[in-house]
Image (cartoon, rainbow, N blue to C red; front, top):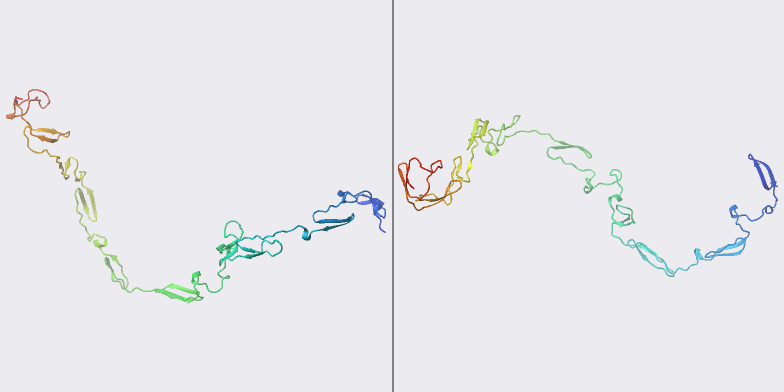
Length: 336
């Protein structure tokens, strides 16, 4: 028969003392077991029925039941179905009493797929055309069967026929064929215009004919004769000649107060030109000492003799010598 212990003393892992309990275990349990010790803290707990729940009977023989169907007793007045209109068409929505909500795919253009964005960040899927990243890389060796057409980079045939053109040879069978340049022989080479050394039938040298004609960019002579122009000197012999400037004198047309061609220009004529013979002349002289205007004048009294030649006419004035000194001038007589 089992013995129920009410109190046990343990020392170093061994039971050193024990007190037997009453065989009726309920007799040794007194008071109310607290919630902290696994009880309910009361001898008669009061259960409260929540929404759509009923409690019948008395503790500890109470029945807890649900009063609503499907977990609730509320009333539904309308149920609708919402789906993306770009993908689905909806019928039967809303249901207010009884009915069926139906979602069907809408018609789409050909060659579209239902997929996420072609690039960029994540987004809801749509119907769109395929792009390169949608397709995995396919090996042309193991992933493709049949004959690759020319438009796709193939030959369009499993055994292409290669044709050898001029100076080309093809040996072997497809796909292990060798394409080579054919060898040949030259039977004759003729020298064209401006060349010498032809015709060659075995071996020889083609060279440039000299002198090279003017039409071919040459001078047409082996010893061209250079002619020195104005203010140019030539020295030495062809092809070692020196061309130099003959001096520093100006060349070309003269200008300003001069006219003509260098190196022999002349004084330019005035305009209007006062050249001519005048009596008792009245003259205008510019800053450069040139007579720019002249006209006949009226003679004055007195006779002036220079050396042995009398000079008549003119007006009164003062006589200076060549040093600018007022007074007698040697060899000059008369009154003025």
